[in-house]
Length: 356
Image (cartoon, rainbow, N blue to C red; front, side, top):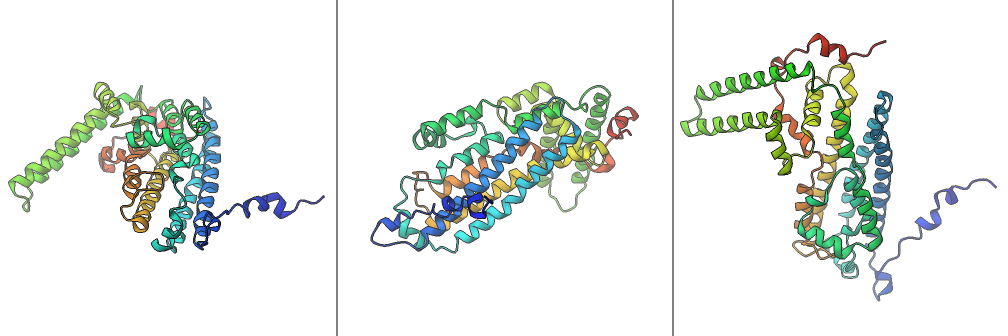
């Protein structure tokens, strides 16, 4: 028997899965159909992202990690990132429904909530969101809104190494933070101090700043210098880790900084793009969650969510708090103009080239 398009895609299941709650009342809400379809599509794309990330986890867990597999990691991360514009566009589709249209059936949804999307929680957990990053409000929702099997699946996933931890391991295995690199980092710190000293002199001689403004600018420079020192000081960095100001290990973050500084070197071009792909994922996820919170505010104002949360305020707060790769983004604090970056020694340079 020949394979049929409809049976292959199981369209009989998918196209019959729009069961309107309002159809069970005296008045059917036309826009509830759109509401269901949009969220079902969200879940299908979440499933695709999870599918891609499971494969990336398996690749990054390999020790050693073959260089030929890095392009696969990059391609699959790029695929995940290509989905966010589609998810953002779905918000535009949802906004063709007016607040009054939504209110026609919203009361029928209690206590169901987008918070109960297990796949979205799995996705965030896979990328490195930890239990301690959740607010007390979120933890309360977990205990009261998720089913026992859902909690068990999340708990099981939390015990596995997430993508952030696997990235940390991979970066720490790279030979850019010890040996001849010790001298490189000493030179880099000297260049940092030299660059900041030039900035300090520029501020002192600035004609458009009064004395108070100059003092404020110099205080910011001193704070920046302190931040540099913390990155290179093991004890200071441990304090940053314990206070959750950073989540990547010191060695991993130094290696990521090295990759950003010398991304033009042949051996570092793919690692640089991989780091950028995770930054893009984090940025896109945060932008989508922020856009979702704004849509919720337009639809509901300050009303509570159907699941009992504080509604749009809750969505906005979690979007800003759940940054997954802020450490990578914050590496821009430690970058210098190219003219200040130390030259690589011949020994390091030798490691940077492909050998045929």
